Length: 172
Image (cartoon, rainbow, N blue to C red; front, side, top):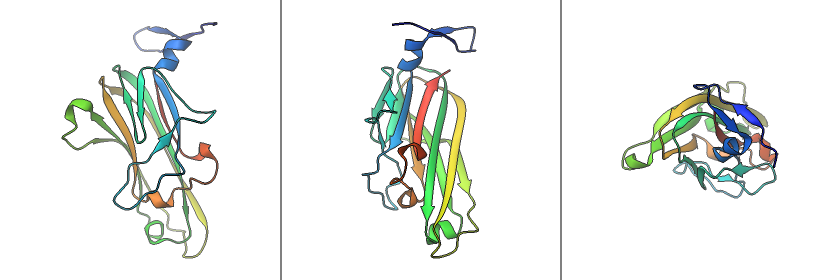
């Protein structure tokens, strides 16, 4: 296997392509998941040709957990579909990435990134789409779990392209 050198830009550390992939994940939303107002944690799949989870990342249906600490670029994209539903009509669409150390499971997760989408142009009965994209670099301690929540998970367009709704990270 040919190993490509990748410079992380952090402290002059150089990683091989294999090491980079071991600390990375890219998932698509699970279109089979059923959401309610009480269930806001999104479920993700890794069984597609375009998805993967590296050896240093653990995947549970609704979360990614990093085994090693470091600076990670974390991203999530959600495509919402509305037909004039009340939640979208009033612009209360919230997309959040939360973090929680495994040693602090009894405590509430901490918001890491969030996006409040304003959707004032949606009119009742008209098909409309709105997207939310989050992405930034954060330091994560070892054994930190990440989840993605949505205020209106029932309005996520999970029937279209699986690439419209993604969640992932990689060590930089």
